[in-house]
Length: 542
Image (cartoon, rainbow, N blue to C red; front, side, top):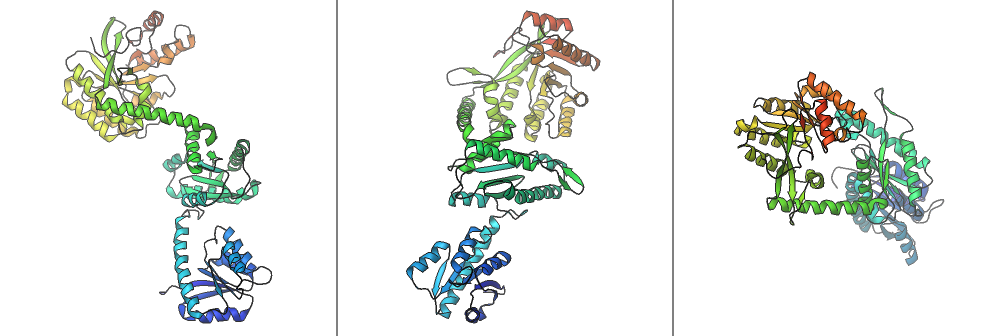
């Protein structure tokens, strides 16, 4: 057995019986715990977690059958092997022992060799159980983890599962050290563990996944829970979480959670996880999986169809650039074009990125779209004197290999690059502004200009705008399209124009869709007009 001493709990109301068992095992390097009845045995098992329990069947107060049944109901002790030694020899007694969770049965008087062999086998089994327990515990809190939950979902009848995610967990990591975040999460876990049993009129098992995620499972045997009751549990959980802040090192942290939950007995975990993702995406406090399944299924099917179209279009060279002209309002001439990506499907229909760009961004094909538009634009404008612009998203700018591709293309085509403008939306979610600023400094050395797209649509940080060295402000279409009958929006556009003039930036009005809007835009002094009144996007330039 090696040098390690394994613990055996002997439960018997007769001292001579306990001594006989110890004598039979005295050379096996075991340490022994004693209990005089089932209640003492249960308490000792919970307190000391022995590697094996050897118990008599019939004892005063609590017998071996009832003790074993209670042990099997406890998460902490349910995997400890139990060997019953008893003079009872009736078949029904052995069946009763097995039904309550006894692992094996030896009749009295026992054979010493048989007892030693059985003990060695159960000690080995206990070690495997301990490894399993370690694999099913969260290392931070010691609570059952995701592996344990999945096992319980397979082996137990259940009626509802709630998965909780701490809101803004990633932001905690960006702001605080790992040790601080762990302390916050551990304190939150302990609060849940302490509060949940006293806050609900039904038994709930707590699981700690880690990374700010937890789960509550309605225990085996609980009556069914309908949508209304489940929603009420969610509201109770929200109230429980928000009852008080968490204080770590004299810093107070307000915690809130998002909950996805399922009341189905099939695919329970997958459904609750889906509901959590949906709740986070839609910024809802809690979502029931069974209420959104059809909607999510349709969305998945929709995305799958567009992913298929995207893949086929790439294979067939049907990702193409269309070009929408920008009219110089002073000279009434076309001087620039914006390059826009289009997908042509198998029946020749031309689709705007509204349909396929969200799917592309979540796939490995997204870079190909940027690459294709850049390649086609450089080719077509190499023999033109017109300026051209290409849209970049924050996903483009934040990727090293895309920035490298763009810089290489610019360096290889310096004359064409002088007429290039990169458009991107000023976005507060940019992860590494310093890196973006460095990229802009590099491309400006080749005469490339920067345009801020959708300016005025929401997030507009004027200090950041100046740091980006923007050359052009493209006024968001939501302001321009109503400018002919909304005086407030006209005032906003006029203010943007004044700001642009004072900072030496040109202006472009998007969504110029009528003669009246065009007239007002020119009256304000906007430099360029873009929209269907000027021209829709075309497959060629003039």
